[in-house]
Image (cartoon, rainbow, N blue to C red; front, side, top):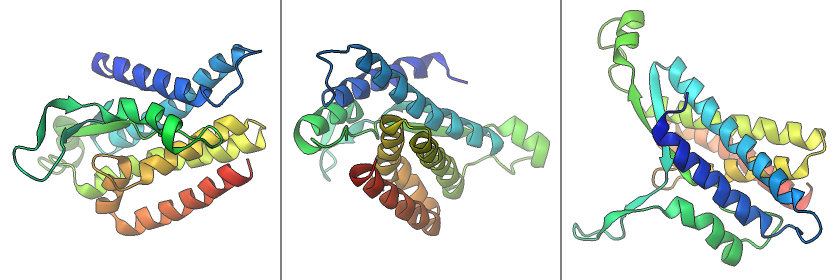
Length: 214
């Protein structure tokens, strides 16, 4: 379900986040910790990605993952970068070094997705032009599915005794629920405000639990 264009950015972000998380771990005696962190981050990120891809497929569309990038830095028409700035690749390390020196907390909302309808399949199933465009509500459903699976895995990881895995799922859900730019939270917010409010409340509870309990 991953195309060639997606493999490199996804792997890059997994490596960057794994390294950032490992900065708060004691690797002086056991380098296996880094491998375990990489595995945990990979499972968390891939679960989010594939759940969104499956949801998109069920909505007669397909998504393509990419690194979150900024094209503008101001409101003026001339305030734009010559090339998109891959902010999603820098925030995990920056957040760990400056903003979040707490319990493996790093920025994880580094991947965003573009979506396009699968017109021929939609026309075959539902009539011509029925699904020729993706609505904001559909975008919100796709984005929300990733957050839901991470919250479920956080609960499963906690009860199975994998605290790092559980926290990472909550962190990814937290940063993705933020209604910023191209992040999932923005798609959910404009797709369905009630859905966003409900998920945001669940994520906030999970975040407090991850910081103070897990």
